[in-house]
Image (tube, rainbow, N blue to C red; front, side, top):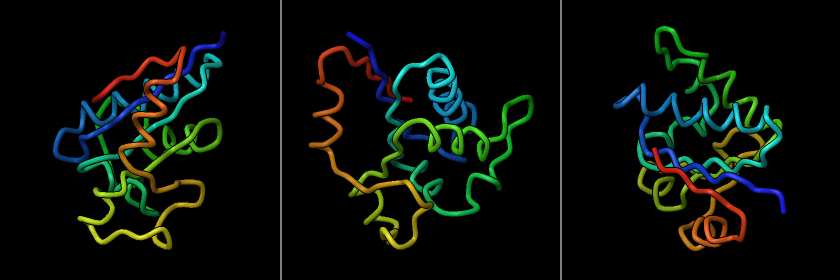
Length: 120
């Protein structure tokens, strides 16, 4: 059975290293052939909006915009329903390819047989 990876990133510009690590792990897993589902929660919710990842800079790290593009190209990116609502983000605001879903969907993905879940 193929293993897959579910990553929940809770940090954004408030904790740039932790945030970038989650995106880096997601992109690296995809490059290795591992199916990935990346969840944007908390302050990382802002990266579901066009241009926000481009504005994120962390020295000695791959650009977040490139990492997000890689995950969108080969994996799944989901914005937390409650996190979106708290920030008045709607589906019409999102980068193409990002969906909005809630905790029950996260739990379903995380409990799927063969899945490893990480939280950053």
